[in-house]
Image (cartoon, rainbow, N blue to C red; front, top):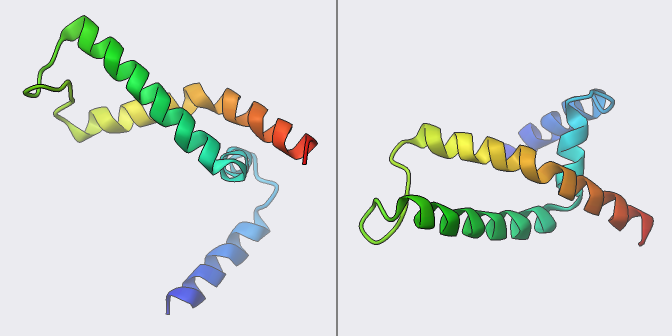
Length: 96
């Protein structure tokens, strides 16, 4: 059942291959491990800065208490890291 749905999704995406909104997805999908490792280091860096500025607010840790804040952090991080991911993707494809 899931396989047929996956095939239909892939078929639909292949029809819109030249869409401008798809280019960032292709870039992020071409170097997923790089993005994953880079975002972990960036989150740790931001966490250390937040603790230095505001201190801990969730017991011994600094955290957010609303899911909307997590979504906002995710979007900001995605936009901030995209240039580095795009540059690494170009480097990877130029130096196989």
